[in-house]
Length: 226
Image (cartoon, rainbow, N blue to C red; front, side):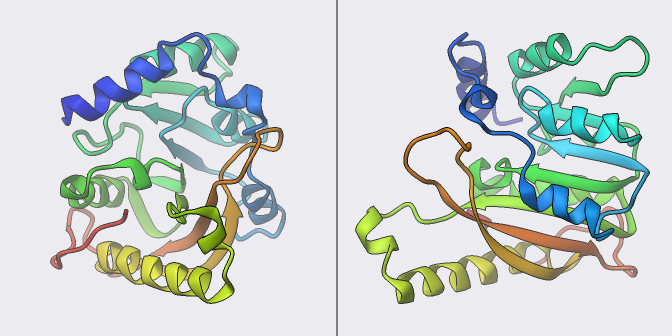
């Protein structure tokens, strides 16, 4: 476990004022559309990596999925459980570091990562990939939302800069996952909430598990997903 990384996020989530959901960070349209179009299966087990207060997990649970949310910050899990408590019918939440531990209850049919991977240290991306692969099965579908565009806003608005940045990001991410997952589609997104000011440009990756992938295999190449 990266104790520094955990300490950072625990400090944020233990702050009563830190609540992304209040700023409009709800269920992404890309997830809603993927369910409506049946790109994501209509039922099954769902895992949210870096679930925060669990809005996405609860959304899937309400639609009949068996949902589990995990987060590195125990305070986030405490808030998620309090917000979505529903007896035996509610979603499950566990304090788990995806880079240190394999989540329980796998394999999953759907895995969603809405901004977790891009905050993980480069040295831990192989552990992340290994543990995600360990709880997926053939043809599992995965959505990964990642931030790009950390430079000045005026530079990011130049069309060729955006295309170059997305292309380089795509290559780096594909290198990390290539032994286990295949990219089906890449789209642009905004990771900030609907009511937040400014913008946080990002990309959303549509992944499918390779049928021949070894469950516990890790990438063999040097790569980074940040």
